[in-house]
Image (cartoon, rainbow, N blue to C red; front, side):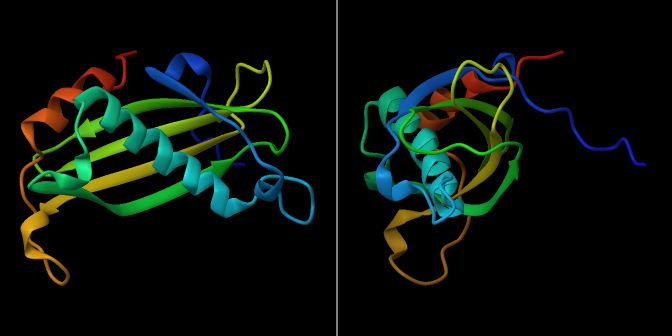
Amino acid sequence: MSHDRPARPTRADYVAWRTATTRWRDDDAYGHLNNATYYELFDTAVNAHLYEATGLDVRALPQIGVVAETGCRYFREIGFPDPVEMGLVVDRVGTSSVVYRIGLFQGPSDEAAAEGRFVHVYVDNSRGAGERPVTPIPDVVRAAVVPLLRPEG
């Protein structure tokens, strides 16, 4: 048996928090949160933080973050009607990308019910549709995500 699987994340692994209200429609036919809803929660956790921390409409910046990669590790079922607490931490801030982790918690458990990986790559917002070159992260965004860097240890 391999022991390479990362430890299940706990509340202490995250830096910033927000709560989302679950809705009846979020559950699938089996009565637990639909897989697509997990990704909506990850997107909301990251972008709501950026809006609040920068005080700007991040969609209107000269450089915008587009999602280059997402993933999710599921540990236990969650669903309606209880709220979901979303913990946010940044694993890496590069020249043109930010790697986030988002832990989803429901109820009193200290262990995450799921954890997402979410990568933003910054591109030129002035080019419109089509190929856009990667650009440096805007300073205002960098200032908003650096405080979320993973605590050492």
